[in-house]
Every structure is written in C-alpha cells, then in structure tokens.
Image (cartoon, rainbow, N blue to C red; front, side, top):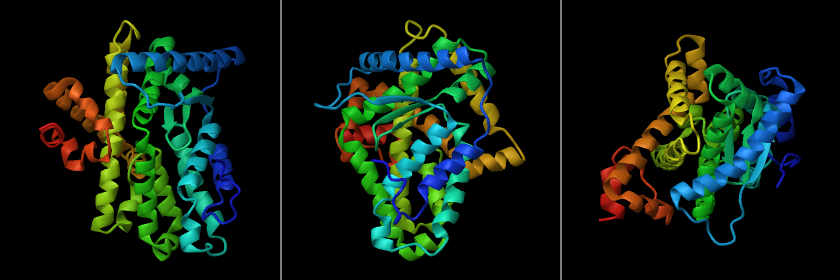
Length: 343
C-alpha cells in the first residue's frame, strides 16, 4: 500500500519523503563498479542470511508466510519507505480527527522529513513488518564497514543476519505485526484530535523515531499514565526483537561469518564511542532517540540470554501470543518472565 498521495492524511507524505531524500547527508563515494558490487553482495547476503537464521534458531515460519521482499536502497529510498510506513500507520487518523488546519500538512512534512533525513544516514538495515519489506541501506553499510576496517563480505552478511532475524520473528508469529500496529494506532487515536493536531509535526516526528526503532523522543510529554503504559509495552517488544536479533547474528558463529568476533568487538566499541559523545552530537543523539535504541539492544539481548540460561529452547514460547511477550519489568528480570510463562 502506497499512501503518499492521500489528501486526507495529516502529513503531506510525498513532500516528507522528498525532503528527507534531498536533505539526507551524502553517502560515501566509490566507483560505479564498487557500488554495484555492494548492492549485488547485499542481495546475495540477504538470501543466505535467511537460511542461516532459520537453521540457527530452529524456528519455523507460519503456514503460508512468504519470505521478506529484499530491497537494497540508498538513503533517499530508505526515507521514502519509512514515510510510506508512517503513512500506513496514520492512515485512519484523519477519519477521527477531521481535516488538518490549513498549512499543517506541509509544516508536518518538513518536520517529519527533517527527522527522516537525519536518520537516513544512520540505519544499516530495517525490516518493516507492516509492508513485509526488508531494507538494506547500501551507502551506510559501505561507510560503516570502511570505518570499522572489517571484512566487507563478512560485515554485509552480518548485517543481513540481523534483519532476516527480524523477518523470521514476524514470520514465526504472524499475529505480532497486527498486535503492534493495533497498539500504536490505538495510542494515536487515544491521544485525541485536538492534542494530535495541536502539535502534529513533533508528535509524528516522535512517532517516526519510535516506528523506525530509533527511540522515544518528545512523544512522552503527550502521554498520560495509561498511554505511557502502552508506549512502554511497545518498547518492551522492541527490546525483545532487537535483543533477539543481536544474539542471533552472533550465534551463527565463525563457521558462517569468519570474522564475527572482530566485527562484534569493533561494532560495540563504535556504539560505546557514540554514546560517550558530548556537546551538539550528544544533543542530536538524544533528539533522535539513539541512546534509547542502544538500551533496547543491550537490555533485550540480556533478556534473551537470561531466559535461555534458565529454560534453553523454552525461550521460543515468547512467540506464541501477545500474552507471552515480556512486560517492561520482565525485560529487566528474565526470571520473572520464566516464572509467569513457564512455571
């Protein structure tokens, strides 16, 4: 579903996507042959990663669930895809809120487009459960592998493993995408038309950070305790998904990714270095919710490992239903999840 041209949408999504693509920082330079090789290798890595993730997790996709559609994109392509994902999520908002005030759609497009432009240079890959698309951002992968000084083939496969793990999560639990979408749509609806349109741009920009997995942002200031509980519930699910993917991409081991330990060590050092930034860079990280995202990786991985130490493959019960998903408290206390779900 492409929702760019919906005139009733609270945001001019086509303009937001265009602005994001236009203002995203330029990617690394390379010869045409090298860029073509990056794209081809990422596509091949995504195909191989699917099989490796299925093998190492022993998870079986639901009946009739097709493999994710793989798209190797540039930064503008990532921005367009995420503008579309946000358009889908907010599709029914105009039905309850009515038409936005004059000029609001354009103003919101500039705000959301600005956030997407900043994020477009930071995302290596992404699985969108609402469209079934798996995105690998070629210029960002190339840039990071150069900075880390790691084996390009190994790094590209390693990134693809993470995103194919996300695709498998939703294939194993076909109910999960609908559950997340329902919680997010309910939260937006519950905020109410007046509150949403009073600060539409910042609210949707914050939603963009949440949906793309980049953190919380200013949305929290708009939430009452009940709404915050729903928001935290979604955050716990995101921590589970990211932590499980982080554990899985390393679990394949050096037989699949020979330099996996080197990649993990250098990648984590890069995360720590980024988290220690000060001044304007630190402010930007907070505004984009990057610190929250790093916490999701860390806390989610600790939850996965903590549950597996206690019940081994019993961890896979987490994919059974919404009732077996970890609560925010359980993400920090794996034993509590085990006691509740596998007494």
